[in-house]
Length: 479
Image (cartoon, rainbow, N blue to C red):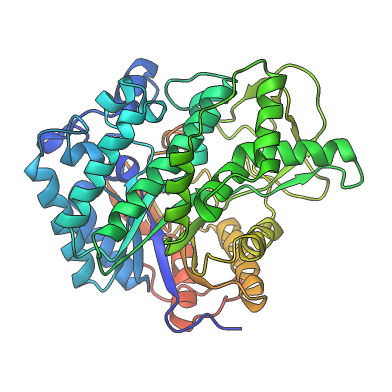
């Protein structure tokens, strides 16, 4: 089976992870700046210096067959405080970026929020404060009016990662752990912020499309025959996926979802969250108008019943086997025999992508268009002086398996319109710094020189033939 002629083959980025220049041209501070300064391990300068080198990265994208790119606008480049005064230099930068995309024939999918709330917004409660939703809507409406050249908008990237890592695992600022009340309230408020932006966009009668990007980790019982493991999977699925899928794709929370949420809150002796009738009306209006959903998929989870206290250890170094995930009132994440894992303890399970796509197709039939907006494999990589190309066969194998899963879902009726590899080039990682590389293009962070990896040549063949190539690829003339 071939991918359709209009299928998009893209690379994904995020402003804070690639731009660098965190203090340039009036950019305001974001929630990460103070946290990373205090941590002292790594920071986002210069990252991949995309702020200055975007013409080079877009030229490489064109050369290697890509016809789309995911970028995000740094909210604080345009509104340094999150609201109020506008920084024209930030506005001008994004106009230049989008013009360069057009010159190279690369369609930008533009995200409004990718984990980088302005510091003022963050210090004023971030997504827990409803007033910040108003500021987000104002920022979004400014962008919609200012950048008519953008045809594909994404409201929020991975709201589940934002809420869960801020308030359950503690890996994002403010680094709280096991506060499920704040987590679920933030999840709902993120859904509401998304909905209000979608409804504002549609009220402006603009010609483009708008969607949302969800990180979806397909959750299975470790032992399919165990009722306890199945219930743990249902609870974990509610925390990670169900609240977002129901809130943004269905436009309401079914009783089962609310019951599972409350079971988690009760088990942790935490208060229920606030959801108003007006909120639900807003969610429904947005779901009825949503143009597409983006799926970020890296791994699945295998859950077993667990009745003890919460204990989590984040593997941020690539030391395989060092992660722990046990959540009170939910369950424990385990490893299924025969399923390989990455150095960061992420199970490699392409069937999880197929199952997640089929779930959306079957459970949310109003969603007609899907994109794989992130998928990829992080590796520890280095370039020796005599090398011209990183031999990243593990990445090629990973992508190949997942592309075949996508093709199978398409054969079974899912309308997948494009695929964005994470990531276009090596980038700064929120919790791993610079030792976990995902890019098609290797970045020497000392010199900022780019080197196409073997996977870039493989991806080029896929984009040009619209088929999934064999894992081996011949590099005729390495750059």
